[in-house]
Every structure is written in C-alpha cells, then in structure tokens.
Image (cartoon, rainbow, N blue to C red; front, side, top):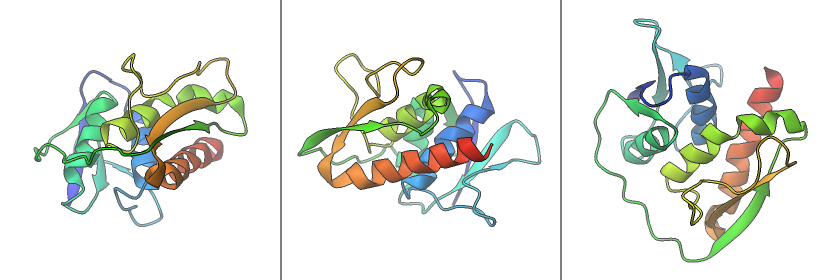
Length: 160
C-alpha cells in the first residue's frame, strides 16, 4: 500500500523524509527500489510517498501525524498495544550537529507507538541543540527496533 504524506502543521517535506527514514528503519514501511524510505510524488511535488503493508498503515499514518504531517489516504486509528516494561534509551549520532534533526524522528516513532511520550508530552528528553544524545522511552521489547530506526536516520543525515 502506498501512503501519500502531505504537509499539515509542518510545511518542510525534508522533515517528513527524516520521519519516513525512522519509520522505515523501524520496519513499519518498506523501502522503494534503491533502498529509499520515501520518494517524492512526481505528480505534484508537494508530497512524499511511503509503502507499507496495509496492516501497518494506521501506525505509519499516526507517526506522520505526530511529526506534523498527514496522509491523503484515510486509514483506521492504530491499535497500539500497551507497554509493559518501559525503559529509557539514549540515542544520538556520532556527529552532534545531526542531533538537531532528531525531532521529526522522535515524534514519528512516538506517534507510531514505538516510543512513549514523557509526562510533558514531548517524545524525547534532552536538548537537541546542546546535548550529545537525547533519551526516548520505549517498551523493552522495542528497544532494538528503536535503536535501528535512529541508526537509519543518522546514516541518512550523514550521507547527506
């Protein structure tokens, strides 16, 4: 299934690309040929496309909505299972300047139900501008997937 990601509260589709990379790195979407987690919609140039199994579409859409985007396609609300053993993990790139770009990834993973928001409603704790890492909360069973998602984001940002 193709989901078309469009602007909503957030207008910068490059940030949607970061969210798409995190969601794909977590395995909720499949890359397009060439390993790309998203592709620009050539019909209008104002959207991105991602591909996923229809069963994952609600979580994928919820991730983009949490990151400030929407999808043209309407899908059911996600059924996110309750978290039983919350752990906190530190995530951060080798090059600290890339940490500033983590916000769409943290929001998307939280919206997709892979991480858990902090009491203040934020999807991470820490300072993206000055800290070497930020912390995210997730179920212990999802920790490796969350780390994998952030690794994909850092790799994408590094390769420019």
